Image 1 (cartoon, helix red, strand yellow):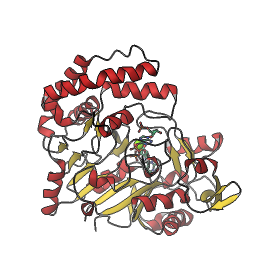
Image 2: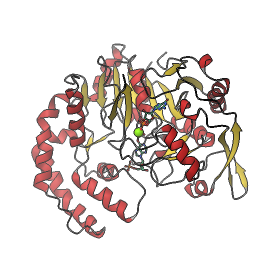
Image 3: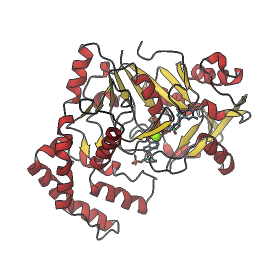
Image 4: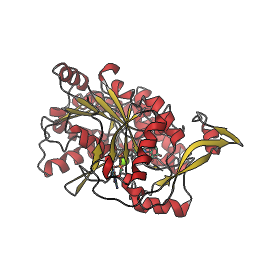
Length: 425
Ligand code: GDP
Ligand code: IMO
Ligand code: MG
């Protein structure tokens, strides 16, 4: 069957590494939402690759990759990423498809994103994600397919700019320096390069499935950043949950298959918003250094905290997670006892369920239970190789969440993990 990889926390759970691993057993890897706010890190033979738009299956030479209709695409970032991969000898010619219905992120989207952040920060990546999705939903967007209809593309951009300029003026950017001709020209400059890659992604996946090929759907961000189900308004502007794998690619929900949730053995978040199990500065710094917790897209230090089982139980529900992958278990080696958050206390009352109301979540104090710590370890390839407490730490997570433990990741490099279950089986 097919499978979808979804982040179960606030992003950066290690989805890229896991997708790269599972891609070896798939014929297709397809992204279904987000844009270059994502930063997915792959370490293969010691070489690090950070992908922002191209699916994390691309380093497997037999795999075909697709950018679904649910994405917002910055053409400069996409073509730079394509160039970098081609420069390393990867032939993308018939290995990368881009949906004509994916929307473009244009310079005015980035300008709006940044101007809003200057006024009222929620800590976005500043890549124009929110404004590009706003234009999509308000039917003012420009899509990849418009690159091949210059009149329509030009008309849509020209129609939109005056309104954006007025908005920017309101935000204190009276001279944003946006030039419709330059924006149009820059879009069209990418058109011929991209033309061979633009194709109906849903149809390609449908046909692939009919011939027994396997599809891996790659989520970006995480469930708690979902526009509907996350910590609104401190969220990203797309649905990040596994349900989006269907509408973001053009195949039905029955094609999505098994849902695999990726979670870190602890928890991080970039940007503002509630984070009940967040650690105070010194302890957070220790975890940040041990785990290298700096954003793969913006380089910002990630906020760090203990594992939050309340939030994870919620993620299991909204994303329908059946199997979990626990990453970065190695990072916790040598930390001493490991607190995990098993409930919240809100206004003196204990709650076991994740509150939908962000104000309640903001006031939530974590109820922490200590799990026995474990020493540093290296080279584990099976659960038996792990220190006993490390094994019970990960097995305990799966037990509380009532899901299967599919994989435990114990290092950033390809192959540094132990597999317990095949998600495609
Ligand atoms: P993604 O956005 O979910 O793909 O995750 P990121 O790539 O933004 O962040 C995950 C970081 O952790 C990257 O630097 C990975 O190389 C690294 N990483 C992934 N899995 C492991 C692991 O099991 N152990 C360690 N030490 N690092 C890992
Ligand atoms: P990956 O795919 C972690 C966060 C931003 C901000 C909020 C909104 O690498 O896990 P946006 O630019 O999307 O409008 O920002 O979402 N954010 C991420 N945090 N990992 C990501 O992606 C993220 N993409 C967006 O920090 O808080
Ligand atoms: Mg990331």
